[in-house]
Amino acid sequence: MAKLRNLPIITFFLYTCLSIVRFNDGASDRHRLQPQTVASSGVGTKREKNLVLNGDGIFKIAMFADLHFGENSWSDWAPLQDVGSIGVMSNVIDHENPDFVVYLGDVITANNIGIQNASLYWEQAISPARAKGIPWATVFGNHDDAHFEWPIEWFSPPGVPQLLCPLTNSTTLSSCSGKEECSFKGTSRLELMKNEIEKNELLSHSKIGPKELWPSVSNYVLKLSSSEDPNTTLAFFYVLDSGGGTYPQIISTAQIEWFNSTTQNLNPDSRVPEIVFWHIPSEAYEKVAPIGVIQKPCVGSINEEKVAPQQVETGIMKLLLQRPSVKAIFSGHNHGLDWCCPYSKLWLCFGRHSGYGGYGGEWEKGSRILQITQHPFSIKSWIRMEDGHVHSQLLLFNVSST
Figure 1 (cartoon, helix red, strand yellow):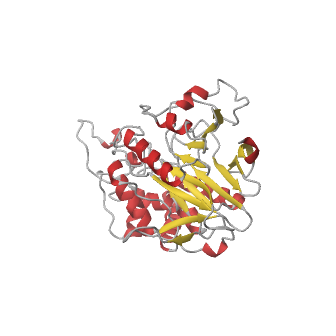
Figure 2 (figure 1 turned 60 degrees about the vertical axis):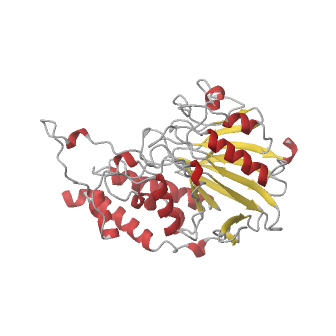
Figure 3 (figure 1 turned 30 degrees about the vertical axis):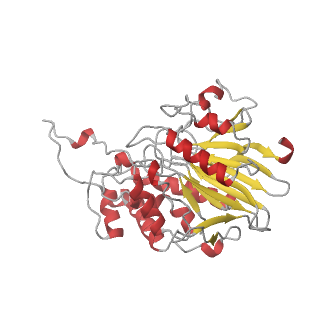
């Protein structure tokens, strides 16, 4: 019986080992986006990857929020959660065939991962997109580099911890890497991002943000260009690290200054639409949150908890409201919320809880989809559920709404 009970765990890790090694398999299945690489300005700088609209004039993004891979990694049930999360992502990808994926934070539950290199779980989480050759970008959440939390059951009755590592996941992960050992020191944001970029050079569009913003790491901008004219920019995607884990849940004044200077440089007249992705919602989400049943102008399907915002509002929303080019902000963090609500002239949206890890196991899993169409220009969103059905369709912006 023990062997049969462990069969799903063994199957899961055989799958992830193979996906780590064969990450280019399936790339030929893509008929939409083939990201182009163009040289960036400056001597000795890295080559930038620009996103280019595909030939049908549509660019589609699937957001996977709060996957929480590696949660309670020493238990029998934890690997089954990760198997379920891979199933959610695979089903959404099969139905939507997205051009791009955004991992909207809390990719892993670092505070429950007792191995030296948590990037092994990170690699598992991004494996469905990689297996299909779909490029992606990642946003850090508050659990991705959180300090390890010692399980109470690991302490003996006298209160002395038994420093063992009875982790089924770690043992199997060791067979993938050949050298993984138990550790409770955690993996930093910087290490996680470096490992992702180095191991997935062709597909990862994630970036290590300016050093002056550290320990906030996932701060960068991506540009979407027209396939008709590469010099025509259709949208800018801004990724901001909302903190948490090893430092406060906040978008700092330094990040605000970086965002302001970057937007003034790239889009000084606010002509090009801008989309923002971060993990933890701002306090503005509390102001527009539906009470009880979700009603218009808000659109969504679950409103099962209160907004858990960033700890301090330092001015990012004031700046965003001053820019008419900012059309929407997308957050994760709250597993029991999936609504979009208007806030002045922009939209505040949650993703949909995509992972079987984390709280809220009773809520069905899915993904928020974002679609940009060039002719006529529009930005739309909806939610695709694990079982394939679609709901909460919403027009976020079109040329007639300017």
